[in-house]
Figure: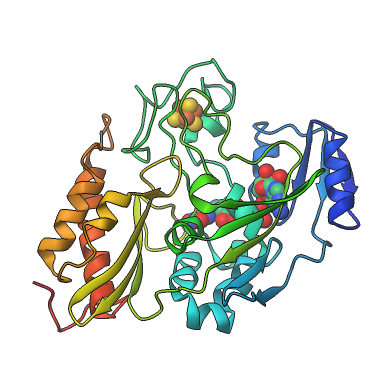
Length: 338
Ligand SMILES: Cc1cc2nc3c(=O)[nH]c(=O)nc-3n(C[C@H](O)[C@H](O)[C@H](O)COP(=O)(O)OP(=O)(O)OC[C@H]3O[C@@H](n4cnc5c(N)ncnc54)[C@H](O)[C@@H]3O)c2cc1C
Ligand code: SF4
C-alpha cells in the first residue's frame, strides 16, 4: 500500500488552487480508471483531490444552439439524456458501446476524456514502457501488439486511445472547457489529445493542475444520418479493435458534408480532412465510401499482430458510412448501398 493524501474540493476555484499547490496531485471523479492505476502502482499521486461534489453535473443549452455538458455528468446520464438522444444520437451510441452499465454509472465526462491507454505493458510495471517511464523503451513494438495503433504511432509508443465517447466527440467537433489559475480556456477537440511522438507520457495538451469543467457540443448533431460502429472481440465489455463515428448531411443522394472519426487505431481519435473532403459533393455510394476509406488508411502501418486492423478499419468505415447514408445507424437494411 502506497499512502496518499485525500482532499475534497469545495468549488472549482478551490480544486484549481489545491492542484496548483501540489505537483503530484490528481483529481478523482468516478475513479474507474484512476483507482485501478493506483492499485497497479502505475499512478502514484501524493494527493487525490475529490471533485465529485463540484457543481459540474448539468447539461445546458448554449446561446449558439449547442449543448454544454458539465465535466461531472455521468456517462449513463449523458447517454440517456433526451437532448442527447434526440440531437446527438451518435454520442449516445458511442457511450453505450463502452464499458459496462455499472462503469458508465460511475464514469464522468471529464474522466472519460482522460482515461489512459489499455496497452497491457503500460499496466504491467515489470515491463518497459515509455508512457509510464519515459526513456525505458516500448515493449509493445516487438511484443504483443494486437490492440495497438496503425496510424500516427511513433518509435517511442504505438498505444491507442481507448475511449468510445471521444470518437463521437471528435466527429461532432466538440470543445473542451478547461480551468486553471489564470482563468479559463477552450480547446478544440482535435487539439485536446496528442500523438505520441517523442513524449508518449503526455496523452493530452492539458497542463498540470488544469481541470476540465465542461465539454461543449456545437449545434450540428447529424441526428438523421449517423453511425457509431464498434468492432471488438466480444459484443460487450471490450475495448474497440476499430471503431468509427460518422455523420452525413445529405441532399438527396449527394453528400453535402461528411464527417468521420476512428477509434482504436491511433493515440487519439483519428480524423482525416482529406478523406472527409473526398466525401463532399459525391454520391453516397460504395465507390465514394471506399475511396474515403482508402484515403484514411493510405499511411497505415501494421505490426506483427495487428496488420489485420488495416483491412478491418477499411471495412468498418465503409459499413459505417453505408449505415449512416441509409439512416439505419445500428441495423442492416433491405435497401442496399451499391
Ligand atoms: C473494465 C473496464 C472496461 C472499460 N471499457 C471501456 C470501453 O469499452 N470504452 C470506453 O470508452 N471506456 C471504457 N472503460 C473506461 C471508462 O470509460 C473510464 O474508466 C471512465 O470513463 C473514466 O471516468 P472516471 O470519471 O471514472 O475517471 P477517473 O478514474 O476518476 O479519472 C480518470 C483521470 O481523469 C482525471 N480527471 C477526472 N476528471 C477530471 C476533470 N474534470 N478535470 C481534470 N482531470 C480529471 C483523473 O485525475 C484521472 O487522471 C472501461 C473501464 C473499465 C474499468
Ligand atoms: S505502446 Fe506505449 S503504452 Fe504500450 S508499452 Fe509502448 S510506450 Fe508503453
